Amino acid sequence: MKKEDSPFRELHLLMLPDTGRTLMSKDELVLVDNIGISSDTDSVSDFIATSYPFKLTFTLALFCLCGTMRVRLNLKEYVLGKNDVLVILPGSIGECLEIGTDTEIVAIGSSTHRLIGEQQTSLSMAFLKFFTSTPLIHISQKDMEESMSLYHLMRAKLEQPDYAYKLEAVTGYLQVLFYNGYQWISDYNRKSLQRVENRQQQLFDDFLELVQAHYNEHRCMTFYAEKLCLTPKYLSQVILEVSDRHATDWIRDYVILDAKALLKSGRYTVQQVGDLLNFSNASFFGKYFKAAVGCTPRKYMLG
Image (tube, rainbow, N blue to C red; front, side, top):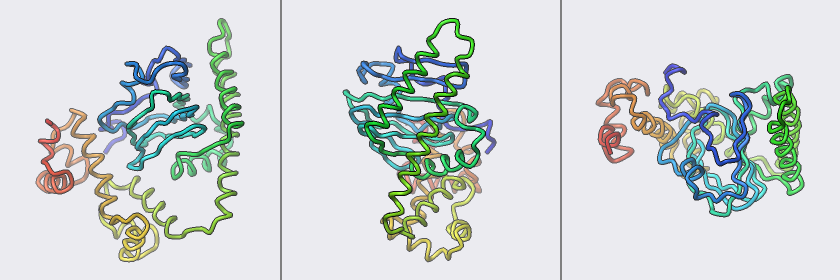
């Protein structure tokens, strides 16, 4: 599948909702929140009430000030509460399932890594690795207050008329926020080391990361077991023990999630969807899809 022909209903930076408090710097940075705005207004509800998965093409950090918000990210569900931060990386598949009427969310979207510590390669890689496996993190009230201070400083700078260096100034605030985020990660990891490491849980997490990266090309357990230097039988046992689900079910769910997005995109025929997902023929794809969903791909596409 070519990158430029992404089948998903992609969520681009410029598509973040205009709540009346949306600020943008070129096509690289968007600041948006619903502070003081009811979550059932059209601009917010249209954004959160999606009935299909979408793929992000940028980095999005969501800060929950109060209330709750329920999302599904790469097949896992997360509930944001007060002082929670959700970091969604480019390429992630997500759905916003529910948001409370009293929920206040601040969102910072960036389409380029140069705004958040590009020069600190080791820190950036640690940042990406952490939030790939642990997108939701809880921070202290003090840390949230500092984050919001930085957010409001960024807003004030972008709104300052006739200021020639808005993006450069905002980049400075973003980098402070980035380093704070890395400190949160360090604190989290330090606390985690105090607990007994669960090898099976780690294998499960590693397995899901591999599946997310390779599901459209590999649906055989042998591939994933070889990647993890394990036998397929042992890996299957571990996945079943940790998640109470078979490993093949996890692989199937990723394939079906992709298939549903492709079918609902309106851009492809059933045959083309099967080809994009590397099925040998349309008949095999149809049987695979129906066994998982309960209806044919065509019926799902038209329904």
